[in-house]
Image (cartoon, rainbow, N blue to C red; front, side):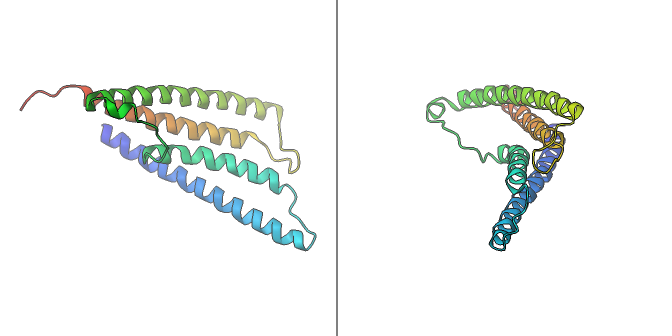
Length: 165
């Protein structure tokens, strides 16, 4: 069951990472186009706004993929001094706390996105609705929470002693 869940989460994280990649590509193309068009005194209105929203999408949608592939920076010079079992316990606890935190962030983003949607909040220049971006951040944080929870579960299972065969 864990392997199936891991496979499903990895595929979902990969799909989210493609969205993050598309966001970076869109940011780059939009910025370059705006720079070129400024030479002809025709800047693209709302470029700064769109780049900010795409940056939020990039950050949120790349979290789970980066965490799954252990791409985050980790300072573990104290943990390295522990036994392998102690290191695994710290990893399980750290992942569990991280999962709880990002689940809470996802929940709060859903609440905030719903409020933005109710009140019809839009961006200042382009008048684009903001709630889809907040819901995207919620989705990225929820997927990260699931990946971290799976990591905590895997680490906890390593701590259970296996009977000799």
